[in-house]
Length: 334
View: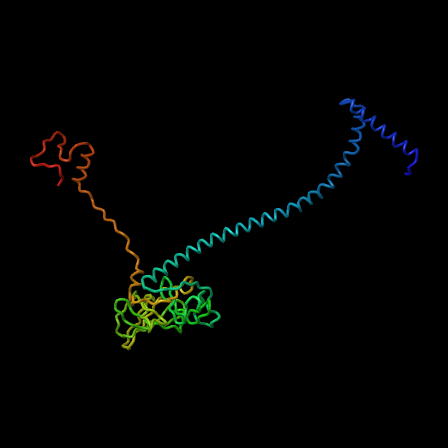
């Protein structure tokens, strides 16, 4: 539309009419003469507005859902992280308690035998060393470890150090078929040599073919020259079977080791041997303390009657039912 004189007059006229209608509508209040026109416009335009709203609302809802989905995803991710952290903390507490218990047992064993130990943790099993029963620990030459040192835990003999690196070492376990250690029977001091059988078993060949040995007897290490590779007095295991004696010069027994080789965790490497041979002292320390016994003594009938009379306010020797006490009666029930 071109800007002409007629168009300007028309625009001014339309504005004047609009102001006039607004003035009439305001002055009319609830009885405005324009209510009819307004109602008619609402009847015509209302369905159109509803249709437009119905078409636009899903789009708006979808946009809101997309916006909120990111927040929900972040909240779920945060809750999952918190849950995983709580599980980790609970697992860590249980594991720390188990390790503290193992360390306590190790220190008690070392103290009973007079061993100076360097604590270490098993970090790997020995698949890299072929088919040998070995483990890797997280201590090495930087921690004072050397080859041919005795390794033990709170239960007993674990093995000996075979390879030492700067921060790790390899330990040959006592159940390895190539493992041999001198042993001594508790009390009788009969000497022998224990060899591994794999799994959780040892064979011990006693040097005396007529040695008196029975199921349940316990063994400790005999010790080596200069305490390498074995210090004396470390618990080895318990006899489970005595082979029948056939007149041989030696005698063989089966032994179940104290150590569970499939669940090793905390171990100690003996870096300082005992000043004297502890012999069976560590075994004595392993014996559980007997439970205290409680002795219950029955109260004599006369004592019960005396106590009943005292509760009633009568002396223990007072007569009852008006009876006169016999001569020589005392207040002590006999």
